[in-house]
Image 1 (tube, rainbow, N blue to C red):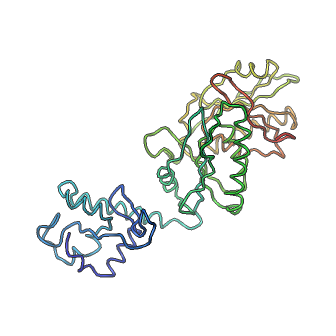
Image 2: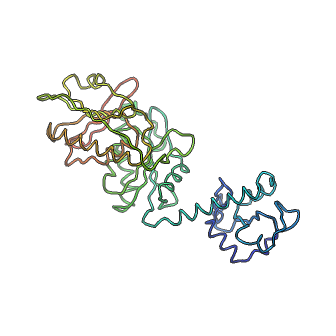
Image 3: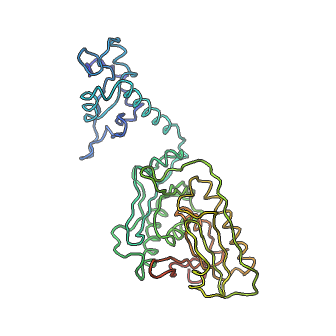
Length: 378
């Protein structure tokens, strides 16, 4: 694609800078200063001319050689992408390559314009759900973080998942074992490494009792941004909008003198009928329900929804405390998106809130006790 020897050193340095040492071919983004196999540091980049310098070169035109060897006509690429665009010049026209170059360099400019105070530790957590192991797609998570106006503190995320866990959430002892492992992972990989008040970007998929417990472990110790995984083919973790109105509805029980049990029901991703609560706790129960007009799994599309949810849940929790006293146990039946389960746990304060007994639902067993927070047995 031209005579590279005519590219001035200052032009090459500028190209490296505006491309951030990554391949500018759209979708590649390969690091060009580190060997992807050996990890050795070196210059693995090539300078590709969009318009070739010499006749017969890919996309040749008669513009001046000075223009062709300047920053506006050059792309920083890996060897494979260099070959691809030169051998397919009918497909990769100058217009397409200029667009790739602009998009890449604008993205680098935007990301590097973010203040240092907006960096976040990326934390991943997954656990077995109904016999299925999940994982966080690293590319999707990083893209969601960038669109949120943050960038990673470290090159690699902090993964606190328990890998290779052969116990499923339908088996006895699953939650006890996973709660212990989760606490140890948070302590060794977050408490002992991340300073109080630092920012965390949390990406988590797990049974809801464990998500509530994880939120409680992080609590207000850190500045935590919780992301929601939605059902898309790509970019599953990005927010759909900056703001979206969702009205949470609280349903309070009829006034009763004293009941044997208190239930807090989250009918958000699906509906939990009172009969399902009665089958677990009996008829002598006061049921508080937080729901939306049409419960579904995909309504958490903007970060403000998490704050609105916490505000409504806090009102209900305070009502329960004032009406029934602080020592009474609250039985929690969750059917809600993962991000809301985490935020519920983050807002819970064991010293001032009622003890919680958190249930998990299994297809064949129904609701069973999973985790206790607060009280003497929490």
